[in-house]
Image 1 (cartoon, rainbow over the protein chains, first blue to last red):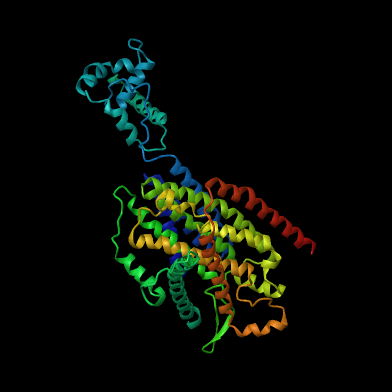
Image 2 (cartoon, rainbow over the protein chains, first blue to last red):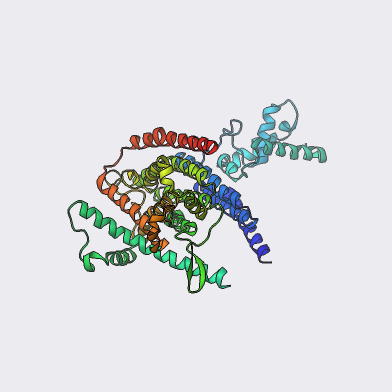
Length: 175
Length: 339
């Protein structure tokens, strides 16, 4: 009973620190949470009766490898916000929404007059989007920062295209 | 119940207090010894011959203003003195001050616990102390502490290799990782391991000086260059924690050296019958006496030797101590197989 309680508390702490490692913005704090994680895993080993493994876990991972992580993190100045990725396709254009970015993309693929979705959206681009949203370039920065890390940007773009294509198929009258 | 809970708890409380008192008096002893070396008197005002100076120091440090720099990383800044202090204290859990003795009609071992990976436990816990030093320098958000903490951590990591290599040769000698087992194997061998492994002994001692950032390896605290070291931005009790942790680490290294190389609680030449009258002295007094000798040598060296230059320090660590330590492990292994 008591052992089970300790086990579940330890496991919850380990998972909690693991989440903190990947969700903290400050990299040094992230490394520290990693150390806590390793130490708690070592405690789990002690509970299982594997003292040698526990001590080696502390010695090698918590005491050795993470110190090197900490060095690297301190040598690379990560306090500066990461540079915003500039997309060569949309950086020069005024695009208010992700789906409008898609319009520009489509236009690049199918230049005006050659048919396709790009042509169908001309009314959006020329008459609605550009004149009414003068500050839309903010999107270039905003959109990237809001985007969850780990999702490939091009993959996201692909999803947009897919969504409009589905729209194209399901409501042909729009186009 | 009494044997599993009350006695260990009592031992922990007594040991923690004893260590902390010993640490504060180490500070006084250091001031006195250095003063005597320099033909001064040292602290003389508080108590007879300054004997109550540690109490005055403690009151002063606790009542001082505790300042956190505005641009410091508050959490890490608060945590790092604790991270330095805790490993220095919990190492004492496995240090054997004596064998099992009769106390008030029950058999009590003079150590808190004897785990079968004791030596590895000490090495691994001690390796966590470097975090406090790195983080103290980083979180202060100040140039000198950062420089100092980089120096300190580079030094600690370099000399840890040599020290751990000497420990490997000691494990080969004793055939066990248990601290009590290491002392027992010296009793069976009939002599202290310092006589069998003089090279490892010397390397361990030099490495121990470097690991505790003591002179002549006190580059991380070089006042003339760094205005004090990684704890420059700390004040009050937090500064005191760094200070106490340094002395606690000195005591740890001394206890470790005594246990590994000087036979722990054993009397000199434990196999010679003619010296058995030395057993009249209780075993823990032998241990404390040997530890005190080591601590005195620490202070003596500080008062005598000038500081190394940084490149000399690194050269000594990587080009001299580590190759010799590795060679010593190889020779010990071959000798163990052949004999």
